[in-house]
Figure 1 (cartoon, one colour):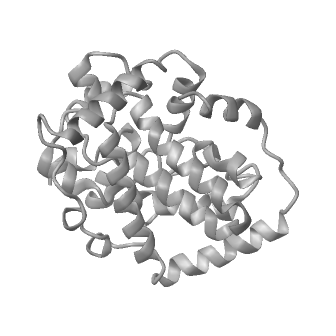
Figure 2: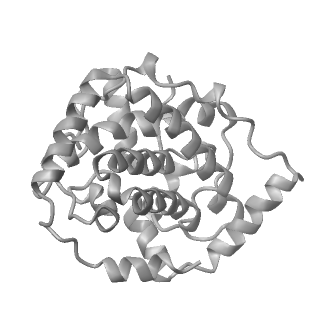
Length: 265
């Protein structure tokens, strides 16, 4: 299986996925890699979900081009910087993107059970889009428009990987839905942040709008499948108990700055 199937916009995610196939330990094991809740054969097949990417000259392509033109206006702004932060899937701070939406500082130290649950779902949410990526190998926006991305160190790798659909947006959308199960009173805020997390890929100039939207659809199917997975349900219950025990503690910082960045369109 070609390595390109596993590249979802982050070098470490590619290495982790490859390690799951080869049985080797990933260099990012301590901060990202965990055994997925779903075996490869249990992950919903994105090719049964995704239509083909927008055809050249179609109205859907025109919509993608217009959305990308708007995104380029946000380069070198706080929203562009937030898109770069949202691209992080591997550091100890990777799960903190949803802290403000959840109302608690999420991380391996502050909320270890929630953090572990989110990290363990990443592989299934992200890699679910791999069959569609491999089939269509759509060129990414920065390849077409020649403009910078918010993650320049990843550009060479991203050039070799299909844009449609977005694994990153699938991860963000899936994690938002998971967190809404843990913090039901914050469901609206979390889903809104999940939508913005996906839109960060458009703003980063690495995905088209339709890539983002369809990645979220695929992640919804993965989320539905997780609801019948005993290991996921057990960890979800533990995360809910942790959230109850920590209610009112670990208030997240920088939420006003994040809100101002998200308000930029």
